[in-house]
Length: 282
Image 1 (cartoon, one colour):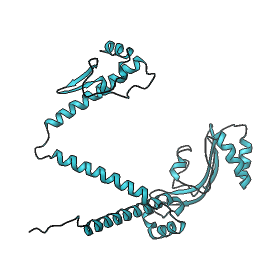
Image 2 (cartoon, one colour; image 1 turned 90 degrees about the vertical axis):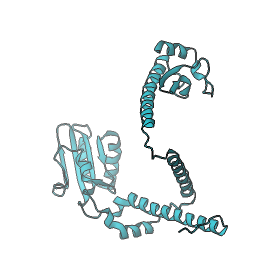
Image 3 (cartoon, rainbow, N blue to C red; image 1 turned 120 degrees about the horizontal axis):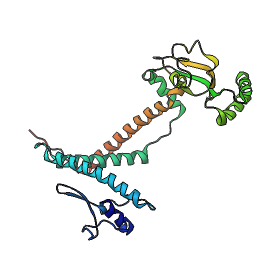
Image 4 (tube, rainbow, N blue to C red; image 1 turned 135 degrees about the vertical axis):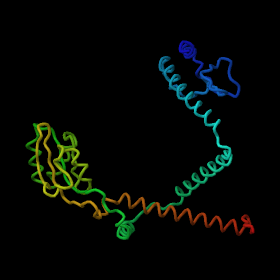
């Protein structure tokens, strides 16, 4: 089979397209009961420049998957429950796809995605209990650099200086030299996220308050850590930490309201045009 496919590739017949009637030179690759797989059933599977050897491998892999899927499909067809209405399932699924696609179109065209700071803060104040933390989070500064780096002493001076200029120099240096750097004092991180970059047991939710500012080495790296603010587990985080989630909630609520309003308008229009009739029944 592989030699045959190899010759087939060399002659360039893969460029032919699938038609309703099989070409005489089409190659049968596999059969499972009444189902057949031909080479022409694989358009677009072979990028330009694909070697004969790679094409054979692509075909072999595809055939293996196809055969297994076809075997499973045959067994499934033989065991369809008598009360399973396939046609109804297909109609329902088609209707669901069409409805979902149209709702996405409506949202894209009509949804106002602008969220003001006032709206965001109002939502947060009314809903912040739902954002209760499952793990402690903090704002912090963290740096992990190779031990013995030629700039180590300068890094220490910038870190200890802590001025705006020092931090600007440190961020620039870290972007090119640090193994890990978190030097944006406005961002929030889970304690466990930062602890993962330190030697095991160095930092955790239980000791983070006591170890809020330290430097240490482990032979390979120098670590710099300074906690700026901490919110413990089961407490309410600040808006800046949950802003992304809050925006998603607001947009989802808008989307639900928009779609309901559109459906209501459509219903009223069709009712007024006598295109909807509801019949009484006993």
